[in-house]
Image: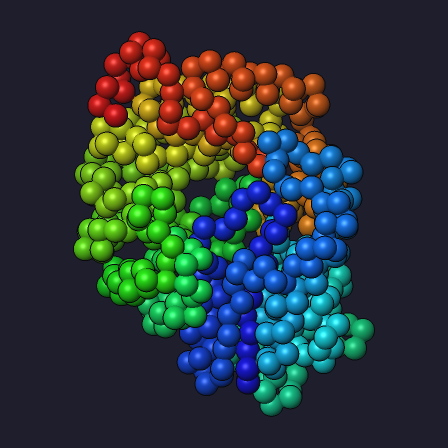
Length: 499
């Protein structure tokens, strides 16, 4: 079979992916290993897929949300999405026997436009969809689009078996993790078991030979799957299960990635980046230290970025290993500025641990690389709780020189908040991800039911007051308090003199 793999971007956003969709290249290697031909359309490369004249006629704004979208902007963007024609993708699909699309909740509405256009050209060609959004909402995907098969959960073992059924023209009755239509019914086969650490080690290396030259400055490397924790707001698949690759397997992936430097576009400083894709690389700090030692052997033109947990990195020896690994960004999810809020979010952290982690990072010379992330407007939070989170986050900037990211709450399928949303006063359902309404002011107020418009106005003013001591940058649905801060603040608190 000839298989085309793709993933949609968000074409009307003022920002773009800096890294390729690693899942496409890993699955491409597996499809090859199974004896099929494969092509990858990493969609951001195919600007010919946009009918720019039709989009312009739709009067589209850009998703540049230093604010949330208005109802009119949502309507305009939805019309613009309907005007997408994906000519380049359709041309590639004419040479394929099936198309696989990886989707998340933010790009699902563009995937629907892709599917519509592909089916218009090739109505009999099977379309497969996988990814986090497909895993959590297979019924909605099958009922609201022309998708033929949904792959739930991890696709590395499922996809080859499904392709074998399509090749033989038989129904995938015995393929775990697949959902599909049978006449007027939807069939959900039993879930596929998660890959074990040994199976993750044995996966082929991503088919980065299919990378387009000069498009990306960053490559992704996976060192583990899942997360051992159960944060209430989190919708990642594999929560409660953390499965690490061996350090030896990670080394192979690191050195494999660096061999494709010639296909990358250097950043303005002439450097490249490897992004660790793990939800929590630091779950085993001793193993993480082994990975950081391997990083030191990678071409020095590469920097690294990752996510970790505060409570994994409280000891100076563990953070010291990280400090030698050319870390460009180190994102640490905190979420609340109160201990009560941390417990309600299911974080199993304390503010004292957050403070300790920031202190250790500063003394290790990692303040500029460390970004502590917080959420404003979790469904049980009112204005007072949000204010305390802003104050605590700002104090980390001023005392330790770290960077802080404050994000307004967003609702994602698969989370505990999603499952209990009606009890929390949230009205949104799966239909919200079929349009740009997910990024609207109305949706935000629905997802943050204890905040009123007046509360949000007061919180914005409080953030602007924080601007007097730390530069505040507002991003798409986000507020950043970055590492740049006024010299007078540094001079009044010598605790960050080592930063």
